[in-house]
Amino acid sequence: MNHTPAPAGYVAQPLVSIVTPAFNAARFVLDTIRSVQAQTRGDWEMIVVDDLSRDDTCDVVEAESKLDPRVRLVRHEVNQGPAGARETALQAARGRYVAFLDSDDLWLPRKLELQLDFMERTQAALSFTQFRRINAEGTSIGRLIDVPERLSYRGLLSNTAIATSTAVVDRKATGPIHMTRTYYDDYALWLGILRRGFVARGMREDLMRYRVLGQSVSRNKVRSARMVWRVYREVEKLDPLSALWYLGNYGARAVFKYRRF
Image (cartoon, rainbow, N blue to C red; front, side, top):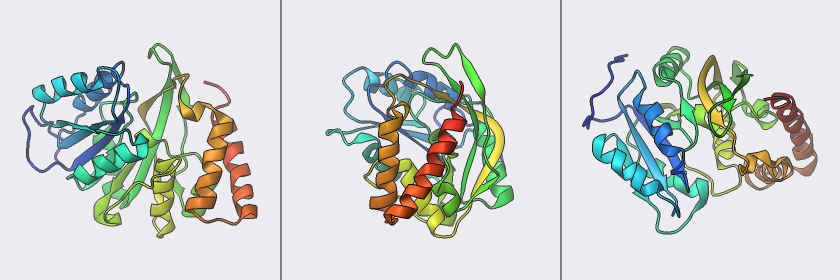
């Protein structure tokens, strides 16, 4: 693979499309964009979908897109939530690979380079990596969050291992992908891919920083459990007993995973 970064103004067919939903993200989104621009691979496009923000998110992204055409701003006229924003980005994506990056998270500089090499080597349709959490100000870095080497569909039903901003999908392997307009749309997407017989490959490299914000939905554990339950019952159509068994395992792993910062 060619690892030469692309210059500003690069307009050839991108290999990677980066999906970034944004809502009231003006405080962090420029740092997120900078972490993409710092990648040792430059053949990407970053599609930032503003979901009717009430702050200066659009102005920040638009200003950066004028300096670097690889950064693309798409505006929603109606708020559609993260699933709708990600789906809008997927519809606009041109790359073979789709990488997910939330508007307050950060990638380490070799993230794309190392992960794409890993996917080519392992023939992975879906991959994910280790990461560390940071606080809102980025002044405190947490412990390394490890990942399993592989996850099947049943394995993922009881596991929280795939952090959205570490995930990359190879659409040459999976075909077109779409977001389910539901709770935990990202989790539903991974399950939908693995349900078809694919295996998710975990890369044991620390390549992402997950920003922990007090208002994050995932920080509300009771609400999070309810959302996972609804994915099991409404999307995966699991019977109540199976859903309860998987939820117990999912919850236990989540508690262990986040037992300390």
